[in-house]
Amino acid sequence: MGMGTSTFVIRWVNLLTMLLAVAVVIFGVWMSTHNDGCRRSLTFPVIALGGFIFLISIIGFLGACKRSVALLWIYLAVLLIVLIAILVFTVLAFIVTNNGSGHANPGLRYKEYKLNDYSSWFLKQLNNTSNWIRLKSCLVKSEQCRKLSKKYKTIKQLKSAELTPIEAGCCRPPSECGYPAVNSSYYDLSFHSISSNKDCKLYKNLRTIKCYNCDSCKAGVAQYMKTEWRLVAIFNVVLFVVLSMVYFVGCCARRNAASYRSKA
Image (cartoon, rainbow, N blue to C red; front, side, top):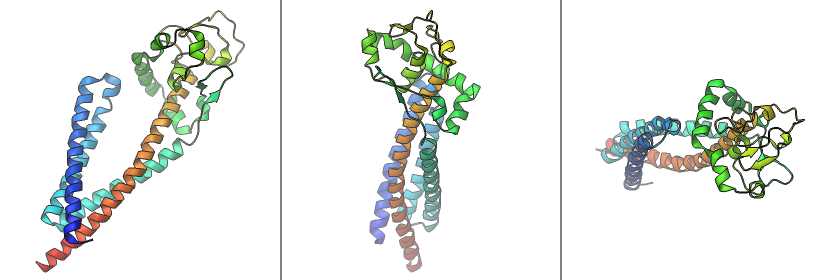
């Protein structure tokens, strides 16, 4: 790749990523002022990511503009570390999300989930008391369970609904408990369940309790996290390919800059 082409590509790629980084930081600041405490905990990583991208981009941009071999070396070294980190995280994400799936029940369109189906990493995180207290408070605040009665007016509508893993696991008792449903958010707990599942005793009709202490709720969260992690892993594969191409162009720009300096 020629000197002019490689430096031109690196300049414009890093200019675009600088603008993207500014947008990411602005989004992080917006999240910190427009969300509750649960989502607000994500703002620091978002802002830090934006700042890191901006720093790498400005080093690459200045290195290409000034044909600085030193800056381009720094840029390539940091970019290589980023590529390795993305690769490691992506492999681990696919390994962690390899286990776990829903179980179909007769008469229900949605699936139910069992905690022990998921990887040991998920089990460790979700069975950690402090982690679950924080997650549970966020689930209660989201009021997903309260909204079920508004979305589904009859029991028939509920059974034919495609509930999310969290709705299926946290808002209702497991089907094996056998509790008759009075409506979409209320169950007849006077029914004597013969199931040995401890979740049957933990479920309550109260809005703040529901099945938030159940393993089925933790399994629903695990399934949700698995889906999100898989999406992130797929995005990382695409990002890895794109950054690998940028890294190749950056190598050409560094080599051409070194050649230019030696001739000057």
